[in-house]
Amino acid sequence: MENSQSAALRGIQSALKKMADPAARASFQKFIPTCQNVYGVRVPFLNELAKQYKSAKFDLVWELWNSGAFEEKLLAVKILGRICKSDPDETLALLAQFSKEIMDWAVCDTLATQGIRGICKIKQEEIFDLAKKFLKSNDFWQRRLGIVLLTNYAKDPSLRSQIEGLIEPLADDKETYINKAIVWIRKDLNK
Image (cartoon, rainbow, N blue to C red):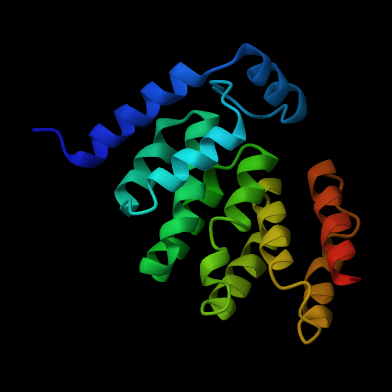
């Protein structure tokens, strides 16, 4: 007998196929050139789906992530953000696991912001520890994830100097997506 999470995954995939739009697919491929396996489903529909699954379990997040399509990963992260408070430690475990498989800025940034925003205050120390680890990674998507994780704290005056010290070694990074994240966080730090 199929479990309810697998049935949910099939239902989500069916909805994504139904809402697929070639123009949206072309737009994603233009603005997120590294995204792969794209349905072409616009983000407002993904946000509505995430609301429908606000009581989902972490198993569904895993299944969506592992399904491999761009929108499934985005949806997984959006659902994670809705359920993260139910198990902050599981959320951080997923963050660490997902960090190894990021392939585009949209999923990266959504994971670092929407995916964990609900636990940023209660898991600040752990998130900073993960960010420090990611900032030293050879994988530039993990480095970007580390920077974007820190944007959650950039407006806190008591953390600004610590954040500046953490991102300073990346100031001369050659990767475009790192440079863009540095510009973003510096803008937030200066607000």
